[in-house]
Amino acid sequence: MERFNGYFGQFGGSYVPESLKEVLLDLENIFYKYREDEEYLKELGYYFKQYVGRESPLYYANRLTKHVGGAKIYLKREDLNHTGAHKINNALGQVLLAKRSNKKKIIAETGAGQHGVATATVCALFGMDCTIYMGAVDVERQEHNVFRMKILGADVIPVHDGNATLKEAVDKALEDFVLNSKDTFYLMGSAVGPHPYPVMVREFQSIIGKETKKQILEQEGRLPDYLIACVGGGSNAIGLFYPFVDNKTVKMVGVEPAGKGINSGFHAASISGGEVDIIHGFKSYALDESKVNIYSIAAGLDYPGVGPEHSYYKDIGRIKYDTITDKEAMEAFHKLSKLEGIIPALESSHAVSYGIELASTLSKDKIVIINLSGRGDKDMNQIMGMNNKRI
Image (cartoon, rainbow, N blue to C red; front, side, top):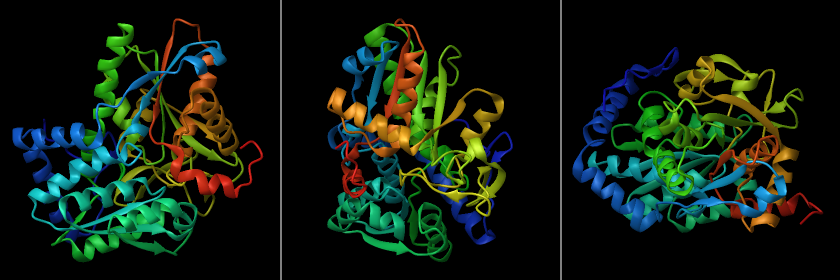
């Protein structure tokens, strides 16, 4: 792999204190040293297959397709991975780097809790100390995942600052990392943060797109017309999209959370509603929190920034970014559950909603692949608490 300078056009970089730059350079060196190391890749491949359960299926959603009456709809079933989401792919890749760095203390941030669960899981697997920072609001609405993390042996620390959601959890994790970087490995959960995290997370998540390309060629004999994925920080989306970037016939759509409406002041659509800024040590599209309440029904999407690679693809026009509201996501959540017997995560429901609407406008010979990035078990308490009469 060619050494990467940390920038996607103007986006990315490493805007961090001098004390952290050396640590990040060490991490970059370790990543590039082992990324093509035969022993490392063999170990990662073993855990992907025997522990995670990869490859995940590419499922033709027959009833949903018939209901829509348009393009064929396929679902990339990352919800079937061990721990219930795509997050385990990156957690395994990074923890194996921590193991080779001789670091036994792992810290992480989490929003919906899936990255926290994945991190706690791999720490249990390799006998490492684990601390998870989580916004107090998310701790409450993701009680199920908090309990899972604690069962796995993690110390979950609620963060009460600001909006008490994902951004504040990242703030605290970065503070910890700055103070304790000599013996601590920060296992970043999304394709955000200072270099080398965005490229590193993308590489570990690109297993999604690599499998998808192989599977659709086996099943349909050609590449899809569209790829759809939800975007908060953007790791599941960049994992699906990246292996298809050079396939110009494949259109790609990243679906951001419009919350209560893109003009309501309550959303987390960083690309659609933000401006270029520096956040958490990198440059990307980001929201001005003095103007927008960072909000989404999906805890894993309410982040005020987005991965720098997504920002770059937006600017060059390679990927389209659009939005879905809470209400639209909830409708898709129920539709997929009742038509296919698959309960999606609220994050993934944003992509499902957009994919359903898009497929309905296309002819039956077209193919749409939706990344089902996680399952909805974690959201049951939240949905029951909403007293939704449709359940």
